[in-house]
Amino acid sequence: MAAGIIQGMGERVVVGLSGGVDSAVTAWLLKQQGFEVVGIFMKNWEDDDDSEYCSSNADFVDAAAVADVVGIELEHVNFAAAYKDRVFAEFLREHQAGRTPNPDVLCNAEIKFKAFLDHAMRLGARKIATGHYARVREVAGRFELLKGLDDAKDQSYFLHRLTQAQLSKSLFPIGEMRKTEVRRIAAQIGLPNAKKKDSTGICFVGERPFREFLQRYLKNEPGSMLDERGREVGRHVGLSFYTLGQRQGLGIGGVKSGGGAHEPWYAARKEIERNVLRVVQGHDHPWLLSSTLQAGDCSWIAGTPPTLERVAAKTRYRQVDAPCRLALRPEAFSLQFDQPQWAVTPGQSAVLYDGEVCLGGGVIDAAAD
Image (cartoon, helix red, strand yellow):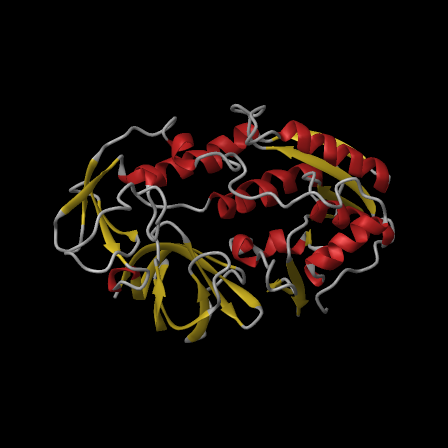
């Protein structure tokens, strides 16, 4: 069966309505195709929820207005306890260990396509739908996850941990569309959020200062910032609060290295046992480039590892696919890139592709030159 939306014929589909334009158009498209559509607004975070940075109340008002225009019921469901236990706790553990996790990947696997999916099935739904830019294709009874047709918005990276069971019950109607078309439809049918800007950042952080947020949960352990020669050029506030490739917030912008050209500083390595942050000058410094990586905690869309030797990979969202050689190990894999990759970061996801097909991936453990 080709990637696309089948006619609904009255089947019940539960749509995750976030208050944004993508999920709003998703609900409208499904209603137009004959599905019985029910909207669910997921509340995943409660701490300081009424702050200027992360308020679900305003989003719920927008979702309710959308449901009214589309003509569907909307239920408000609180998944905050499950989110804190399954996603946020792991997020803190990883940061405490000096790694940089991607909570959106875990949220999709544990909340949106597990807790939410289970809730939808209890409501008698045959499928769930979200406003992700991705596609599902069924081939000989197996389900493939495909990139969204809009390369600039493709979100398959965040969905790479989904299973066959989850994909078999998932619809991504706008995965076949470009964002400009989604906006056009929203305006044409009079959706109240047609011009609402896309949300950015992690759902429980929003656009607030990230370090300030983390410091509420993790203790500070200040230490030395050393350059490549081992000279102290500054002090860090704790390795948990930095990510590899970071340029802003290092606090050493005016320091020159060895009297050479004044170039920006970047976080390049973490020496956990010594509590040292290594920093280098220049975007293309060799310490920021990696030709290989090792990853664990693997998840494969097909349920089994791919048999391909050559694949493409993303080591962060919005990265161009990088050709590489895949070597599988028990519960792990390594990648050898054709060209060195910039700021490969432990804790982030390495997601593998065969053309437009997302194969799955794993969590980066280490990278090397």
